[in-house]
Length: 592
Picture 1 (cartoon, rainbow, N blue to C red):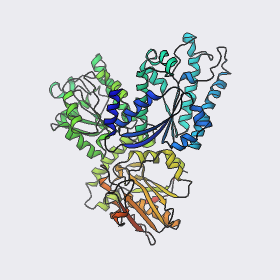
Picture 2 (cartoon, one colour; picture 1 turned 90 degrees about the vertical axis):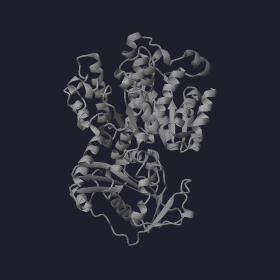
Picture 3 (cartoon, rainbow, N blue to C red; picture 1 turned 60 degrees about the vertical axis):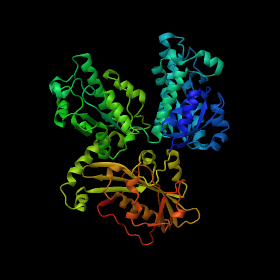
Picture 4 (cartoon, rainbow, N blue to C red; picture 1 turned 60 degrees about the horizontal axis):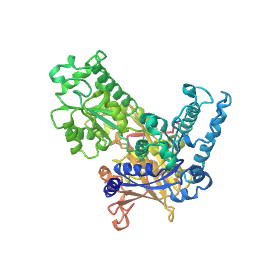
């Protein structure tokens, strides 16, 4: 306990922690879970403030008396229940026909909780599903018979997953899988339950808190995006420079070869769900590349978004990869079998994740999984094609070199943009972008899905998005501007948020977005745009954004924003504004 308090004090003293308010509604006593979660969130860059329900009052607090939660104003509500909180299991004699009715009856309690929280609190909800029961009265038949508790929980979990899939404000924590990984015999502690109403072991509480921490990081766009891999004895066995490409260990012939192949398959699956792969190896470039021509290599050169093989220090190469990809190193995970290289990289690059993978490749995937570095809360179109988007960017860079005139290069891209006001089709992507974009982000204000959705009908905001397509492909939804009409001066629009994906830098998309927001603002009688720049460690690239767009600075003594005395505010009169975009053709919205 003393160590935990000391660690909390030490972590709480760190600079730059993001304030976050979390309500925990528990079917069990949640103090231990909250204590562990607080430490993990502090170490992840958050400063949490918690509100906890009394033991077992999760339904009452959410549905019957939601006022105290609403007054707390949480960004996230976590409804933590376990199978001991299920009110009505079907009888052993239950038929297949009757089982859905029992599932619906239990689900209706939870649907009431979620509806009430959405209506009264309007924030992100995390609801866990249920672990299997500690005992199976029907043995193996418990998972088959409609009267079996295991079968009932399985059906219940399926119903919760369907609700979460249909409602972006509801995220499901897979407690069933967490308990299975810990092991059911180590999960439930009857003594703690009967004495303190804590349903699981300390190990179980830590596993739940770890999972929650990763989900909250994902909600705020802090999941990792890039997996940087060493080669020799990491992606294949042996040293390719000494052994030759035909002698490296890969394939299905030996257990060790099969383990390296399995790890390559795991990396490829990560790429297919949107994680970028990069190579960082101490090798001659041509020799390193030859390994991927091995007939048993699952990974091919085209699967990597960046490739650094030379004799420079690895931390310098990783920093160069970050520059190439326009991503922060705090979105990187580095895997290397060499403990010395891991230590150097971790010491030289603050924020990078360097898991202690050891030297047994058979365990690498499980270690990465346990670290939950790449936790998503949703998988959008942009996530699934992210690697392809970076590949297309490389093609654009090659094309640019053929033109002496940059404007001719932009015209050659044949760009078209869809710019329109926020609509339901893109709300998830818009909320995702607000939490993932750090560099081209003028204010770095973060918004949950609920907060973004609330701006649409209130009549006080103008929010537009931009999608960009060119001859190489669809870049997707890559820019957002959110304006707030001044409460005392309806002729002024405050640009609270302006961000853009770094994938489309230097395409003049920001000019097209200015045209878009100016047009819609003037339609509402607005004559002045007020833009704010709040400097952070990552958004220096946009410090002169408003100046480049022709905005004039507002007196600095009036410009403190979000507690930042170094913020600046810029003004643009749009009374006689004329569209400025020269190289992007604006098209009508395709999706209704």
